Amino acid sequence: MSNEHPIRVVVEDDLHRSRLTVAFRLILAIPHIVWFLLWSLGTFILGLVAWVIGLVRGRLPDGLHDFFASYVRYSTHLSAYLLLAADPYPGFTGREGSYPVDVKIAPPEPQRRLTIGFRLFLAIPAILIASTLLSTPFAGGGGSGQNEEWGGGEYAFLGGAGVAALVGFFAWFACLARGRMPRGFRDLLTYALRYNAQMTGYLFFVTARYPDSDPAEPRALGDEGIQPQAVRMTVDDDGLRSRVTVFFRLLLSFPHIVWLMLWGVAAFLAAVASWFATLATGRPPAVLHRFLAAYVRYTVHVGAFLFLVANPFPGFTGAPGYPVDVQIDPPGPQPRLVTAFRLVLAFPALVVGGALLGLLFIVGFLGWFASLATGRMPQGLRNAGAYTLRYGAQVDAYGFYVLTSRYPYSGPSRPAEPPAAPADEPDAPGAPLAATA
Image (cartoon, rainbow, N blue to C red; front, side):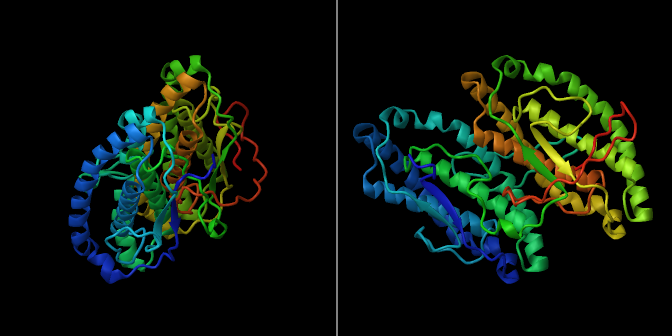
């Protein structure tokens, strides 16, 4: 079997948006929304027919396969238009190659009758992930969460809420202001659309291949044009999980959760001091930068351990070297105006990060059962969790701790990273200060 998923999203979008059509996007989409609801009703009815046929024959007739494939493409085109992942007005037929955010679907193949019989039950984990990322006709819901680092929020879209709906909401203002879609927003939306297309195709027997939750596959086109972030993630994990530590993971994490809260009080005070210092001098003090960078790394280590993105028990100092880690650039100059309004500027990233935290909880929940059963964390879930932790670390570093003036990049793609800078030495032995990269 080819490693390439039978359902793939292809993006040919230049990021330019028409302010006029953006302003009236929802009104312009009303005919499509009516048609989508009618087509969804027909798809649900034919889905029952396809289930019976699949049980008898072990594969879909070509006509039914093409019908469901067109539905998957059309729902993707419409969602891309509504959420501003693409600009042109879509057609009503779901024709392949007719839209900048398109879906390529492989021809029908034989499928196991047993998996057809229990398809709806088997699809429940994928439906949970899809409903967190993007509302679907069958699974409403939204990923929202909050802790001391990340805020949360919900935004209604076709009966549900998800990360993509929030991104589309903020993208509406960005496109009106700039006439251009932020690259990170577009890439995050195409990840959500791709997973939703694979989930819908799996649910309607278009393919027997399970949806791939890995946000970095396939690698987005044009990654070489993305400037490296000041906060970058490294993943050195083999996927193996100890069933014993997985079973007691929450209990084992309790000392870290307590220490994280205590350290968070000191981090808050240090962040306030660093904000005033950066406002006055144009760059954060090195000692406060190291302290806060260690705290950001530590939150990533604890999150990775708690949600099964990594396996080893982490240390308590935020020192580099954990299998799921972040590299943070040394302190540099920062514009005072950006520093003064940091929290206001960070608000969209905080809300999107809070919604992505819902995905992290789903990753931990599903990964717990998978790791107990197989002794391994599925790579797609592991990478999805690492992506949410990376974005959360960038939001923390920018919005709360003034570690960088580089805005968080919400896209899940992986641009080439420069070599790590030499590590700094801690200021004092035994202090919870780790070197930054």
